[in-house]
Amino acid sequence: MPISKCLQKSGPLWKEWDRKAQKNGLRHQVYAVNGDHYVGEWKDNKKHGKGTQVWKKTGAIYEGDWKFGKRDGYGTLSLPDQETGKYRRVYSGWWKGDKKSGYGIQFFGPKEYYEGDWCGNQRSGWGRMYYSNGDIYEGQWCNDKPDGEGMLRLKEPLRGSWKRGMKNGSGRFFHLDHGQLFEGFWVDDVAKCGTMIDFGRDVAPEPTQFPIPEVKILDPDGVLEEALAMFKKIKEGD
Image 1 (cartoon, rainbow, N blue to C red):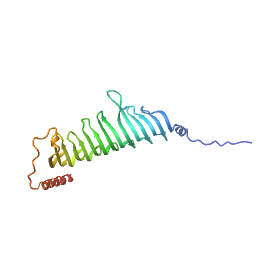
Image 2: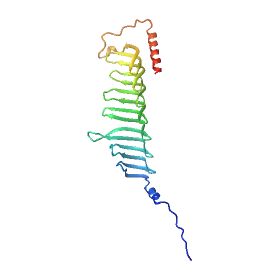
Image 3: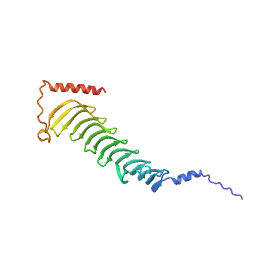
Image 4: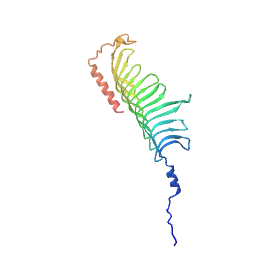
């Protein structure tokens, strides 16, 4: 008696090969065509979990968390020094969607770094910037520049408001060497009006020869208020 066989229909071979090639779990070394390579965890053929990526072109190394193929979570980015070839840490902190987001520390040089909040690869929120010349800015940032309330600690500290990286609005400038304090209003880094008083003059290293004389104007507060109102109105119209 003849017997017929029904062969099970199989799908294209490339689908089977692709299924077998899908990366999941821990892999030791996976190289890309351009020479980049990755060691770490995978999920559904994407970097996911803990892992280390090395970019051949720049020599950059990222060690940390991944989520569906992108840096996401906590991680450290390092670059080779062009002179010594040794790796130096560039950024340590939080990432989201392959961009610096959340709290992190960025190193711009041996003595220059920023610690604070990030959003979309830009300094945004609260942060403290240490400059190579010894200056320190602490305060609010927006679009990678000081913006909002903050304090710039120079040899002569300034406390006040900032916009687009410049002094704007009300603030105080401490002339510590001379023992004086200027309190007034700034527009684009220029002091427009305010008052100057003696402040710690008796302990200043280089005090002024004479103390600031008493104001003889009949209504100094009124004059100052009028000037402040004028400059604030001009600023609001920009």
